Length: 94
Ligand SMILES: [Zn+2]
Image (cartoon, rainbow, N blue to C red; front, side, top):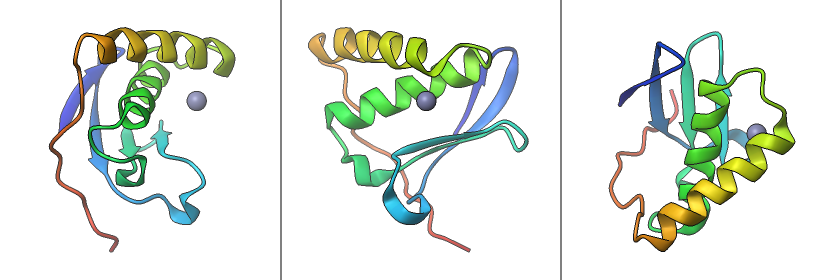
């Protein structure tokens, strides 16, 4: 899906990230935000990762610590109000 952050359009894809070490990635060059289905649909982790990566896209100069804190707090607030990521299409490699 295409979403707008910091006045630019980003392609948001659900796709496994090589090594499964992280659950989310932002590629500034290709304007692609990748979220890993390994974070588990309907999980707090996936919501937290999504909000975290969206904040990176919106505030590219913000420190990792601030993104981490703000993202967690926003995800926590949304989660407590019932927000979940329940449906998405996973892209395969290649
Ligand atoms: Zn980060």
